[in-house]
Length: 62
Image (cartoon, rainbow, N blue to C red):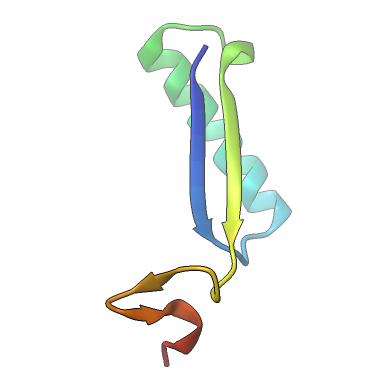
């Protein structure tokens, strides 16, 4: 039973998350040869003040 975690900056719509979940599920099911109902997808929204890149918080970019 595959567990897939996607971490990304917050701001995606519910529809985008639905599409992402559906496509990731389809691909993992196909590649791993498991039924789609056995694939778990976790989407973690990261706030811009909770992670950094290049020594700076993302919220401080721009």
